Structure formats: C-alpha cells, structure tokens
Length: 113
Image 1 (cartoon, helix red, strand yellow):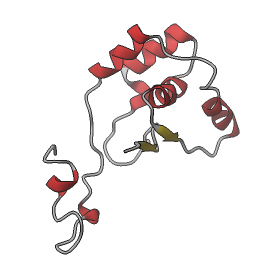
Image 2 (cartoon, rainbow, N blue to C red; image 1 turned 60 degrees about the horizontal axis):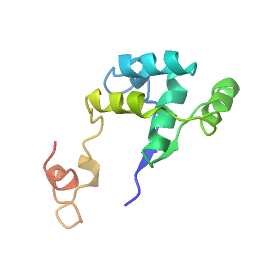
Image 3 (cartoon, helix red, strand yellow; image 1 turned 135 degrees about the vertical axis):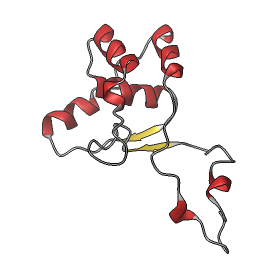
C-alpha cells in the first residue's frame, strides 16, 4: 500500500492548532540543513517513501516546495523524526456506514484511535 500525504504541511487556522512547521525537530533539522521547515517536512515524507501533495497559492512557496529533490536528510537527523508525537486531525466518521467497508472509526484505524 502506498501512503499519500495530502496537505502534509498542515492547515494553519483549521482543526487543532498543531503546526508541523513549528515542531522543534523540524525547525532544528531545517536550521542544520539550511532549508525551510516546509522543505524539511516535505523531504521527510518523500524520503519515507510517501507521495506528498502540498498546497499553496504563493508562488515563492510553490517554488520552494519543489526544491526538495536534490538533497536528503542525513540518517541521524531523519531518526529524530520518530520523536514527533502522531496527531490525528480527522478521525474519519464520514467514511463509516453500517453497510460500507468501514462500519466504525475503529475499523479505519485498526483500533488505534
């Protein structure tokens, strides 16, 4: 199964007030590599084997989002990303139905809600 990160940089101002771009691991890695936190977050997803689909309406950010293919996060820094606590913004209630594939939210997440 291939994982896809839709809106991998978060949605500032929506859902919870959690910003991956402000997480100390992301910020520290960005500073060490001379990249933006957004570039580091996108590169992490790519390096982990996921498709990343960032969204922006700002030309400068769009250009920066493409500058993630000619470098990589060194393994020692990459390992630090496992320290980031997982956050689920959407539980998936809208995907459940008594006659559908998923009857409950627990089935979607294998009980890991």
